[in-house]
Amino acid sequence: MENNHNLINFIDDFCFSDELEVFDDAKDFYSVEFFSKKFNVKLESIISAWLDNNINLYVNLRSEYCRMNRYANKKEIRYDRFNISIGRDFYQHESSPQAAIRNFIPCKYSEMKEYMNFSGSSAYKYVYNGYASGYWRLQPTNITRFARGNYNLKNANNEWISIPSEVEIYGRDRKDYLIFNQDIFISHTDLFVDGYSYQKFIQLFLPTKVTSKEVDSYYLQSLIVVLLINKHYQKNNKELKALSAAESLNIDRMCNCKHIKAVSRSSIDRWIKDVFNSGNKLTIPVKNGRCTQEKDNVIYIIAKAYYWADNINITFELLSSSLLEECDKYTLEEEVTLSIIIKHLKDITLFSAQ
Image 1 (tube, rainbow, N blue to C red):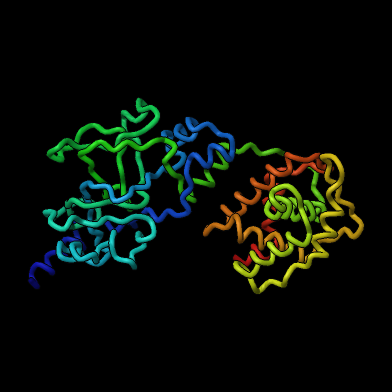
Image 2 (tube, rainbow, N blue to C red):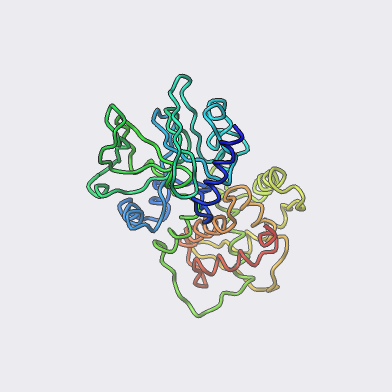
């Protein structure tokens, strides 16, 4: 046994590259249907961006029966067939970075094959059947462009021999992949993008209005506060009342950021009366002309309650896109763009602390 251990260490040290492994640790998954509707982008355009390798796409599997081909990286704990069978491997153990993304549970009576592998930085290859769950990354193949409406995950025949496939399905990297010997069709609307691809998505599909005019900070802060309160705290989605808005806002405050001081009904009443006029025009008088911490608090509370993501930049994008939609409903005195809103949000101290 000691001789075998020394042999593996020798192989690791002299036969394999020390090049840093890049693992897929994506999070904050959003459906492509959500993006298509929210940003008025054709689904075909999103698929094209993926085919051009501009964004990543994922499929959300739910205990789908398939075969796993995976490799043990030399930097991680060395797995053997027993450890995999009792859930100690990379795709099962709760302490694994992959636990929140994807999972692969071997069949109870599945044959588990272990091979010596002389490729990259791995010394072992494992092949076994089981059930895949969570988000697995799709990679286009030479025939992907011919598929319409959905993708078939099948990439092997009944004997598990590889056949031409519409997509490839990867785990934490390109060396770990799934094999399906049955038809499993995934609609384009059921695909997902990850948080990293979100930023690329914004750059690709959202037009940026360029303006040389600076929007007054007081005007922008007051506009954002009133639009957010009006969007999320209308009574029966028809009428905005300061009392009910204050009650709902403070409930969200207690749930998400109770350290922030309660927002008074009188403040909300004053903001509403200052801004909303008859007709479709919003007028923001600059009588004091200065930003207040209380308004920043309200913006932060609503962001925590309705737009929060692990990546603060995604929070900014979601919040600013929603605000821009609200701006389009009114006649404004100033031109407000997505970039202007995001810049203002980033200057709020509560956000910069994240």
